[in-house]
Length: 156
Image (cartoon, rainbow, N blue to C red):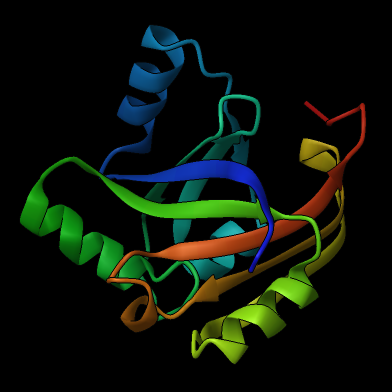
């Protein structure tokens, strides 16, 4: 059995990130930090995260065929379904490698590239690792597993 620590964050896809930030930030009190450069630019998306509220907003701006986060699919779903949708579920685990072995032993595949970063200073994270599970094995639900340790000092 994979031992999860809980829901790390819900990923909400939006057509307009600024409107999403206004709604979830101003109305619900989320304090998002937008991820600039690096992974967001490579994926052709804008994204913002509030780890304390367990929310991530993602908006395709230059859709490329990548997984994760697969902005081509996100752009198509938003076109078909409206201005926003629940896009993915990210679960936090204590030991990502152990979780992967357990899932693979049960026939659940990992897709895309494993993401690893020694530190994510913007959010005060160390030892960040993330993988995505194959939607064909998870009832069509986009699920990612993540492992990291939080430090006390995210960079604003």
